[in-house]
Length: 72
Image 1 (tube, rainbow, N blue to C red):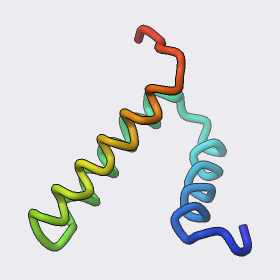
Image 2 (image 1 turned 135 degrees about the vertical axis):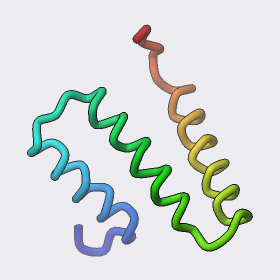
Image 3 (image 1 turned 90 degrees about the vertical axis):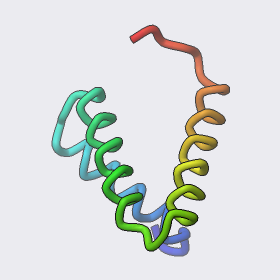
Image 4 (image 1 turned 120 degrees about the vertical axis):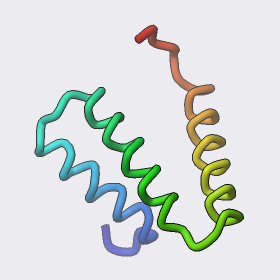
């Protein structure tokens, strides 16, 4: 991932690690929620936490607009 932005390189590395662990997708998604909540709690102030909380919501909502809906 030479030349990729740091966040993209990290995401690719995390995805590779998760795939090698062979957990079900639902377990991975639940774990990602815990990771996001933990990371948000470590941000320095409420304003920064709210910015990233809204950013995560926006990104997830935007990605779901482009995908077929699955009833789970």
